Image (tube, rainbow, N blue to C red; front, side):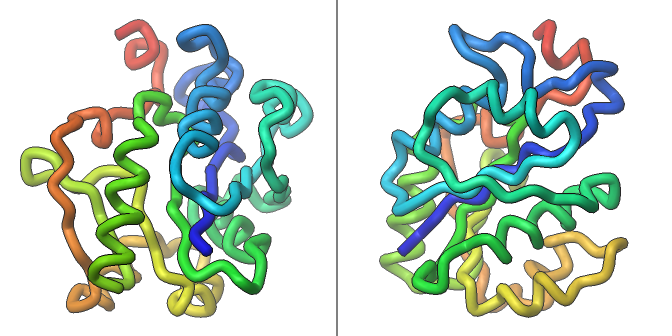
Length: 189
């Protein structure tokens, strides 16, 4: 089973308002990301909430998701990844980590990562566009305990670097794997 872990716990300091709630293509930023996960070939979705959790929860309607609350969301993104991984069912084999502020990511991109994982059985599958790595990232849950054990200053890059021989870069034609919304200027574009 392959699940999505959608990270939607941040406080949106650079935006100045909760960016997950901002209107985007007929829904919200987080609504668009959750919809992409729903449309992809995944077995389930965990959405990690934190700051403004009740408001953010209301921003993606009745989508079929499992909710996980990161009480330590102020520690940063890794704490949300850890919360999401802890919420995954025992039967999950891998997780596609999706950023809640990346509403341009398409279900087809997620499906491509899943397909390449199934073909190669590589433990880390990274999308690349124009030589730059982007998101979402697929991680085999054989690394779950190692990720959960990381300290608060760590990032997932450390796992990627430590297991570079088990990583696969997948060229994605869509430049939106590199695009997120952090500031009012990003949102305006």
